[in-house]
Structures are given as structure tokens and as C-alpha cells.
Image (cartoon, rainbow, N blue to C red; front, side):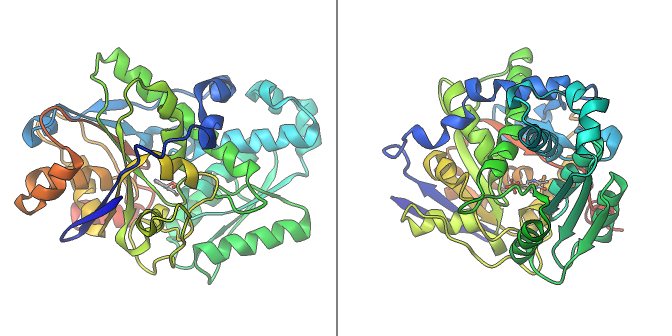
Length: 407
Ligand SMILES: Cc1ncc(COP(=O)(O)O)c(C=O)c1O
């Protein structure tokens, strides 16, 4: 049974999932199946976990037990990536190379894939992808790292700064099309087929599921880092995990990985922009099928502006997410400002448009008297231990300055 709750700017769905859990659709995300992903990431000489921050002052002010934030603005910062997506890109591109060259994928390592012998074989390989920013940057960076070429395509309206950032990390070309995200994906799919290039897309569709699955697996290392960091910090078990969704690969990856690891599963909250909330609409339809919506002309949350749920993670999210939130851009603006100007004693975090929405929601829901019903339905109280993923830094610096400093 699905119920909907609303307060201005926020819609919430509560999904009664308890009877639906079947473990089959997401066994490929279980820890034993993704151990080699972590081994691969560890082989990167520049790999280190991003910080996990506890916003103690804010938790006290809002009346919850703890708010943990995984700060992905620090991910591969020295290369200018500043977003979680590189974890999927570097793993998946490496795996594609292994498959093409007949190398055992479980044996993939940085040293092997960048050895002169392998580079000689990969120098003419071409990778292609569509992106609203961060994924393409990760793929271009990874391809360059392995000595391959990459072509990246972006939907109309993409920020110039994001195009330049993709070129800076080594894309041969980065082109903004006159199509929306979903049509650009179809366009690159056709280009890849015509030219025999390697399509590395983070969303799956009928007949294209293996590579998106690798990307999703690449994100599990982030979930793993969080759990060991919470343990080191002597933290409490999580009660709520907020996960932003575009095509859903990130949310699905973390949920699937956590589903078996945690003794008591936290409540997973899937967050999307109101204007393009395909998981929200799919859950609301209640028929167990994924449903697409039009990509939005103008949400600020560029990384979440995807109208088609990835079929690769849809069953995972459908079976594991208790809550879905669709919210307006003002919530992410609120989050961006709060991260930048924290409560006294808390560290500041640079959090971009697609990253900050969880914090904006928690702050608003806990402090707005009109959000009382939503607060109650979510089960937020003094025992809540909330995990947020700040998935990118200021990847659109102009807009970041405008929102945070009013410039
Ligand atoms: C910063 C950021 N957060 C979250 C997401 C959502 O990830 P996914 O598309 O895998 O759902 C994206 C996607 O581009 C992103 O760039």
C-alpha cells in the first residue's frame, strides 16, 4: 500500500515494502560479490576514502541523535573530479578493457591496466557516454588514465563549466547536443553501435545491462567506506539513509550493498527533483514496473535530471526503498547554504546542486511546523541517526556562488 503526504515544496510517498522483500534481484551487490571492486579501488595509487563528517551541532539543534555526511566533494579532488561518479567510471572502464583483452576481471588492478604491455593494446580503444556532468567526467578521466580516447555528449542547457571540466580531465571531445538527457543517451548509443566504440553508460535498458551493473558495483566501495568510518567513530546504527536518484544507479548500489550487511536495515529515502521524479512516479503507480517521465527543462539539480529509471536497479529500489521524496529546487538551495554556513562547531562542506538536497530536506522537515505530518511519517525523532551523501562539490561554480553567496 502506498500513501502520499505533502507540504509546500515537498511530496512524500510511504511504501509498505515489508512483504515484498525477495533477495534475488540484488544479490550481485552483496559484499561477497563486490569484494574485488574494493580490491581494485585499493590498487589505485591515488585512492583514499573521502571524509565522513558528523554534524553534531546541527543534530543537536534539530533534535535528532546524529547526522553523518559522506563528503564526496573530496573524491579524487587532485584530478578535479569532486564527485562520487569517478568510482564507477574508473572501475567500469577498467572492466571493459579486461573483457576486451581477455583478462580475468577479478584480477583487474591499476598496475596491470596501465602497464606498457596493456597500454599498447588499448591505445586505439574509444569510450563514449552521455552525461549531465559528473558521470562523463569520471569516464573521460578513466579512459585517459588507461591511455584510451573518449567522446562525451551532454544534453542541451548543460553548463559551460561542466563541459570544460570534462575536457580538462582528458575527453577528446565534449559536445552539448540540442536534445534532453534521455534522447542524448539514445544518440550516443547509436553512435557507439555505428563506430564500434565502447558505450559506458550508467543507466541500463533491455539488452544493455552488463556495463551499468559494473558502474553500480563501483559505487559500493563508497558504502563500504561509510560503514567502517561510522564504526571507527563509535557511531550508532543508522535509522535513515537519504539517497538522491537520477537514473538510480547510485541509490540502488548503496541500498543493495547495505541490504545484506546491516543487521537492522535502515529506512532508505529516495530523493528526486519534483520536476523529474521518475522513481517517485514509478512507486506511486504501484504496479511494480518502472515508469519514465519527461526530463525537466529547468531543475537546478542537473545530476538528478533523468526521466527514465535504470532497469538495472529498479528492482533493487522498488523492493528496498520505504520512502520517496520529490522536492523543489529551494530545498537543495537550503542545503547548499547550510553546508557552507554550518551551525557553530560543525565543519563547512562544499556541496553542489545534486548533493545538498538531503540536508535541505532534513533541516526543513525538522524545523518547519507545517512539516509535522511528514516528520512523523518519516519517523524522525531524538533517536534518529541519519546518513546523507553529499555527492558532489561545486561542479557548477557560477551557480554555486549565486546560491551560496548571492553573487
Ligand atoms: C552529484 C550527483 N548526485 C547524484 C546523482 C544521481 O546518481 P544516479 O544517476 O546514479 O541516480 C548524480 C548523477 O549524475 C550526480 O551527479
